[in-house]
Structure formats: C-alpha cells, structure tokens
Length: 305
Ligand SMILES: C[S@@+](CC[C@H](N)C(=O)[O-])C[C@H]1O[C@@H](n2cnc3c(N)ncnc32)[C@H](O)[C@@H]1O
Image (cartoon, rainbow, N blue to C red; front, side, top):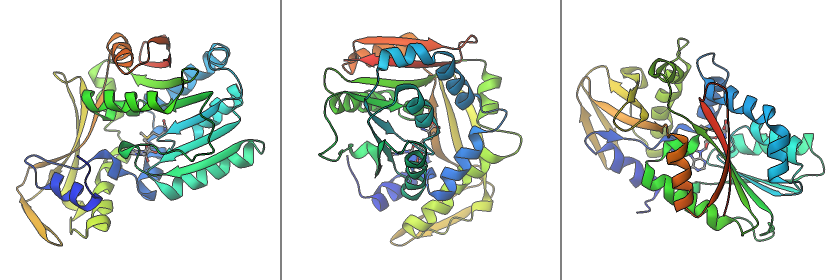
C-alpha cells in the first residue's frame, strides 16, 4: 500500500510495537552520520566490500564490460560508484537516493572526476518505483546496489525490489549487488553498536528528522539505541528504547510510550549466499557469479537475467 509520507510515519508510530522505516534515517545529517559509520573500526561491511571489488577488479570488469549505463540505487556518497567507474568506464551514470542534497553533491563529485561521464542525480524513494529519465538508454544497463542495503527489506519486499531491478534492464543488462553474509554474532552486533556511539547518534537522528517531517515533539535525548541479532530471523535489529514514560504529539494525533517501550527502526538481514542466489533466480536473475572475501563475511554478486 502506498501512503503519503506523513501518514506512512504516523501509521508506523501508532503500531504496537511502533516502527519507523529506515528510509527516514537519511536527511543530510543522517547521510553524513552514515558516512562516518562506514569509517568506524567495527563497521566491516564497507571496507570488506570495497576490498573485494578491488581484489577482483579484473574479473568484475570482464563480466560487466565497458560503456554501460550504470544505475546505482541508494547511491549515498557515490564512493563505490567511483571505484566501479574506474573499473568499467560507464558511458552514463544515474545515482538514485532519497537524500536529495547529499546525492547532488556526491554526483557533482563524480562529474568533477570523470568529465566525460554523463552523470545524473535522481532524488526519490526507490520503493515507490524508479522512473528513469526517458533519454537514459534502455540497453546495456547495469543496476548497482552495494552495501547490502537489500538486507533492510524483509524477504518478500526484497524479492519485490529485485524484481523491479529486473524490470529496469533488458536481457543484455545486469545487476551488481553487495550482500552481507551471516557471521559471528559479536562481530555483527559490534558493527551496529560501535564504541564511539556514532550508530546510536544515527539511530536517534531519525527522531529529529521525523519531528521535522510530521511536526512531532520527540525529545531525542529520552531515547536510547538498541541493536541486537535476532537468530530466528537472521537479522540485526535496531530499535530506539524509551528512557522514561512520555507522550509524543504531532498535528492530528499522538501516543503514549512507556519506559522501556521500543520503536523498531531497522532490520538488516544476513542471507547465506545460496539463499540469496535462489531469491535472485525467483526475481528473474537466472545466472549469478559471486566473489567473497577469505573470511566469508561479504559477497559481491553479478547476476544476469
Ligand atoms: C546503507 S546506505 C548505503 C550507501 C552506499 N550505497 C554504500 O553502499 O555505502 C543506504 C543508502 O540508501 C539511501 N536510501 C535509503 N532508503 C532509500 C529509499 N527508499 N529510496 C532511495 N534511497 C534510499 C540512503 O539515503 C543511503 O544513501
């Protein structure tokens, strides 16, 4: 069901337990905090994925091929696109992200580094469907979805999103996607609850953003960060937990939260590679080739229709 943003947020807040979609993490401040997370010693995904792409640069470049139209979903600071552009020299780049100003700055950085590249910023919520500009070539597309961001969706939604990616490409297209694999729980939990408290600040910032979006009066200091691995669902969960009883109001509504009550803000599913490639096949990507690091922590997968 598609809902306007205000209704989407208030609907989630009035559920029991309450929830806020992780897409609301990303205002300008949230995007900057995420960038800081990627540099934390505990946050292995970014450096593992980047190292994988560098270690297998020739083989990835060979499979993808040059001159593609590169479409990155959730492009963020476009740092990984930069690495990929050096490898495969695409003719055109479209970065899609919900964090409009941050994306525009990042795409400008790409234009500065690759003056011959036709680089576009497409701001929007990709879960509502990605509508590419009409002059973006239909053939030779590569959808790039790094960072294991697919893990933020529960499996039925992840499957739907992969099927949408399949619709974005022709039979000659491909998908290059990063997947965080199951691993030691201590490693996983530290990555989402770092010692410096950056992930906590990132999690709490969602309330500042929500206050601005719907006019609510969350007192951010009254919420603490919680992150843990849910074994049954094979996912990291992030929550905000009320430090004290409170009543939160927004125009047209509000609700009471008791001390210890939580708002669920993010899931990050960890799929075994075989489970994920089966999901790719169901979404219309029959052929997959994967590269993994020595520890088996992360995979970069190239898939074809
Ligand atoms: C976990 S970060 C990953 C950033 C970058 N791709 C990387 O791998 O480091 C998720 C990115 O997706 C964007 N994003 C989150 N939800 C989105 C949505 N529904 N539509 C478009 N972009 C979204 C965020 O703004 C953020 O830049």
